[in-house]
Image 1 (spheres, rainbow, N blue to C red):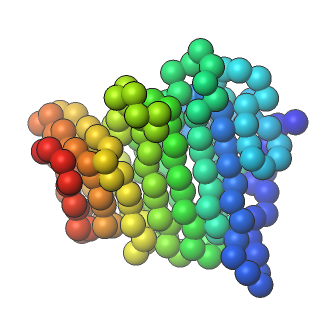
Image 2 (image 1 turned 60 degrees about the vertical axis):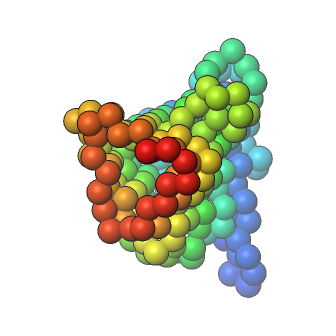
Length: 193
């Protein structure tokens, strides 16, 4: 069973639910959902790389609650999360997007909200093996008053790249390899620069 649309995790009279997506490696892209089961918690239908259609993800975020993308399937694939299409919360109640990667979180497209808080939790190297980091391309992260948490994690911004963060952002270690970090949010680095 493949996901063809975001399930409704909203709760008009309570706290919205949680959507969990758990393939080995996931590409968030403007492409058809592939290798994603159709019921929460979302997991790979078979071992290997999965594609999460960005429209499915955006729809889940617009419903509010917590949406989790988790690559700890433990198979032969690297366990990266690749944000290859713009993620945009455009309606609905506050939401949280948790990206949990066994290895790297590679953000090459923006993640933003224009309505309601969009808290973000970026948890690369969640197995603590030292093999994963958060890698930014030229992107904008804007939680619309929410927070972005990568505490105790390494964030890399390569040369020629400008990452714009317009929200409070907590980072473990920051590596700027001739890259630029700019924006309107407070940035807290608890480790090395």
